[in-house]
Amino acid sequence: MQRGGNTLRVTAHLIDTQTNRALWSLKVERGVDAVFALQDEVAAQVGHKLDLTLHGRPAG
Image (tube, rainbow, N blue to C red):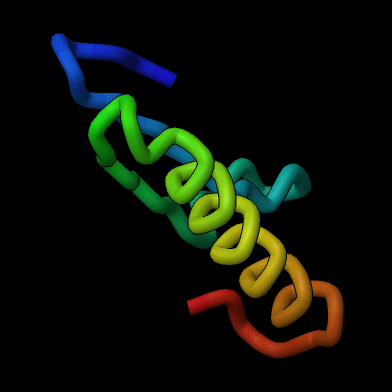
C-alpha cells in the first residue's frame, strides 16, 4: 500500500509461479476516509480472480 497525501493506493498481482508470468493485476486508489471500501474492493477482486483461476478458467 502506498499513501500520497490523502490518497491510498493498493496494487495486487496474480502470478503463475511455474512460469513467472503475470496473469492479472489490479490498482485501486481511494481517499484515506474510504480505507475500508478500498480493503473490501481489493479483497473481492482478488477473491474473484482466484476463484476463476482455481476452477480452471482463465483469470482474464
